[in-house]
Length: 397
Image (cartoon, rainbow, N blue to C red; front, side):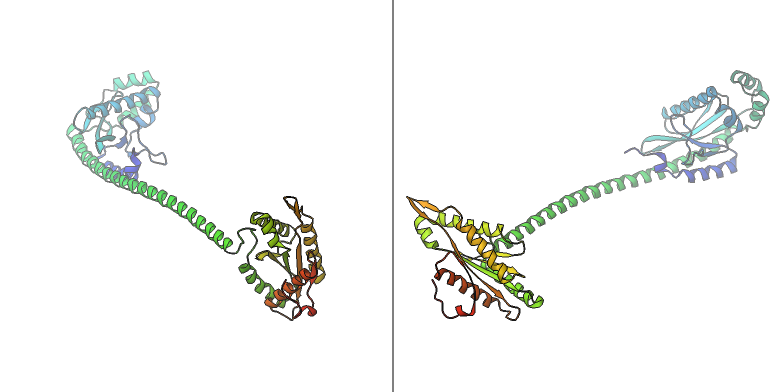
């Protein structure tokens, strides 16, 4: 991974060291990359101190001399790259002395710790007058700026470079440590991201499996309370709901109705037309009841060819009308025909109303059952309401 210098080095801290170095030695310093670009901080300030006016106001401003500065810095970088990393000095194309020490981090020449903008001997002002004329500088102001440039001995410069070399080595070591830390962090972060993705995928799979388990659980629960042939609720479910509806009827004081239906001569249907035909008849009655009941009514296959419908908040007249509607609709179905023999399938129904004072589900079932058997005794294909006279006088048909 490529890192910016600011990722590896605290530029503000380096600048403070440069300020202290300049205060002690008078030598300017700055950071310049191998392409000759002067580095700046996030707020645009030059990472350096002690820059002279001849560079700030002239050499780095005019396009031709600014390009000469850049080319000089690049030449200095190449000189350091062509030999073992050590300090190099160079007379720049604009006539001043520059020197630099490379900062090499993990084998990469990443930046130069630069000093310069000074002279090693008093300047020949005639050369700088020529430059002023060539580049359009104000001669007097340009020469005044030249006279501000310090003159150091070579020995003094080399002592300064020796210090900068130590500083460059320290900066390189700090940068290498930071690079290693960033690499470790990146590796850890990569592993965390991979692990997070794996956990996310595992969690998604787990959620999918839990949803499937929940679906299967509901399916099993539904199957446990459904009649597999007709899809209606079974006797087990009906008994549980009956308890709840009886308790609710007692609590609210509203009537609870139950209709018991039984397919007439169902054994004859099976014997004559076969059990597949009998199953078809059971399914037709179940479909009709589901279609013609309210959403909160409970319809179940009570057993064999018997069906039960539980209707809350239903008066006797409504229960009678609904039962008669089902009987009529079922009798209107096409007859069964086999070998020229025709059988019209019908249903007998009995209903009872549970008064709020009774509160016994078993009694409601018994009454509806008695009424249904009375309908069969009276000729089948009819609806019978329970009444007290039916108790103890009926026999099973």
